[in-house]
Length: 131
Image (cartoon, rainbow, N blue to C red):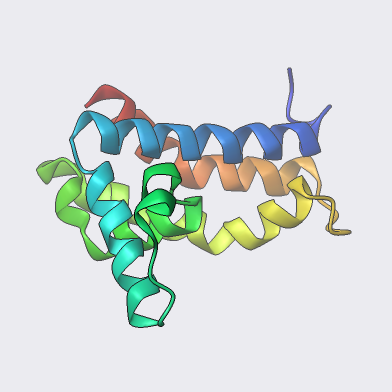
């Protein structure tokens, strides 16, 4: 599959893959619960605390995961923190546009833009998959 032939499909796959890799990495490093706790605390501070039932069924969103990682970059491999942080910052900057493409909010894209999205996160993906 070439990005040039399927830019919308490629944007969808990139978003899904990045989210899956982040979640898998955090679970392997036993930090996924920290992300959940981060969200519980934010919600409680806003007066919308989770019930125990909601906590059992809760899965953090991509936005939750990115926000937590950018505040807790010690979760990344020590010698790769700058690269991983930059990849997450880049993706966070692109996520609104990618979501607009994926959820068909009238956002138009071309292969060049999706290639830019991909190039901004490839180093981070490699690191997280290898660790």
